[in-house]
Image (cartoon, helix red, strand yellow):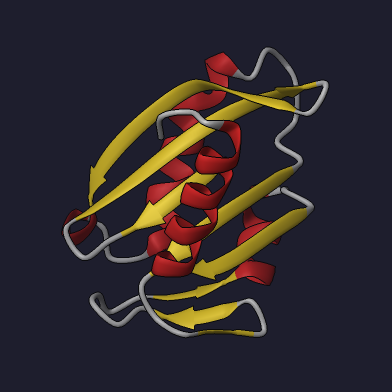
Length: 120
């Protein structure tokens, strides 16, 4: 799962992995301000994405959130949300969750796209 959290919208995507290659299987955009907590968006996304999982568990998730990330915890700078990877991991039953600053996450994605000479 990959997520970019913004003040107006959250873009979430579910990917499958085979032989080191990621393939997008489901995407959804949510209006951030329609949800009191980030966890509610992720739970709704998980519900909608469930038919695309084909009984495979989600083994890892990465979330890009506006704000400084310290010890896998962030207080969003543009929304009244706090996001804690440990809580998300327990609530979603996903063993590996990583929080990144949204700009840092975008930079990492661009670097990967440029190395693969692909369009992001």
